Image (tube, rainbow, N blue to C red; front, side, top):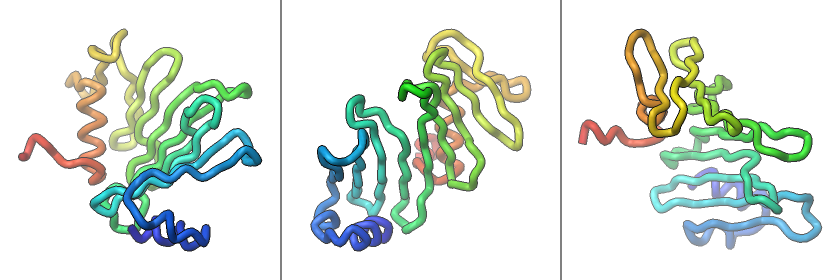
Length: 158
C-alpha cells in the first residue's frame, strides 16, 4: 500500500486510503478522462486513466505484489478520434513492451528473449505463437510471461 498511501498524500485525501476499494477521481470540469485508484486486500494497487465517455482505458499502472514498486504498465494506442487501435503491456516496467493486441484483427504479439512472435490463427480460442518449433496458445504464453514477472501465481505448481 506504499504507492497508494503516497498517491493519497499527494492528493491530500487520506479518505482514499481508508478502504481497499475503487475510487474515481474526476468531475464535469475534468477533460474527457477520469482516474481510478484501486487498493487490493493484499497490498496491491492499480491506478487507471480512462476515457469518460467510453470507459476505455488510456493507461494503467499496477503494483501487483504490494511491494511499493509498479510491476505492470498497460496502455492503449488510439487513433486521432480516440478509437482503440492496440493494447500494449509491459511486465516488470523495464521499458520493453512484452505483449500487444491489435484491436482490429485480434492478432497478438509477444516479446520473448529479444524477439517478437506474431500469433497465428483466426479466433481467440485457436490463436497460438510458433516459438521455436512449438505451438503455444496465446493465453498460455501470456500466463507464463506473467508468472515469470511475478504478476500471477503459477497454478501448475500448486
